[in-house]
Figure (cartoon, rainbow, N blue to C red):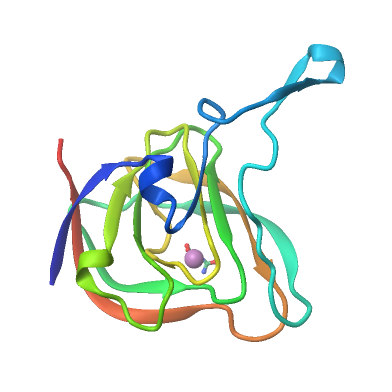
Length: 163
Ligand SMILES: NC(=O)N[C@@H](O)C(=O)O
Ligand code: NI
């Protein structure tokens, strides 16, 4: 059993796993005659394999309780997967770098602050959507197409918050 304390999510710490999507920390430029700031190209969308194409989805998730007890991590070898909260929901992120084996020391746990989204790059091992406190509604951008795009890796992990 692996026991982790979730750390505040930062772009730097998350870099080996994908992108943090955050209007507060990303560059932007004015459009629409200056009425809109465009935060442009914040995450790398990957849609690999046969008939790979982008899916835009909404996930409505029931909250998890803490400590969070995981029995597996999953990966999507043929595409990225992005989660952006629609109502400043906080969520737990557990990740491990792409690869055929997961090494305990490489597993990281983060907690978002409500204004952050994440984009898992293709092959990044991650816990399934784990929203905190209340029902969450997320815009999810991931990959559709042929072939299996979801593999599980049995691993027992307990995650809590430091607060
Ligand atoms: N299965 C599915 O669409 N969702 C998971 O991939 C997840 O990461 O929550
Ligand atoms: Ni997933």
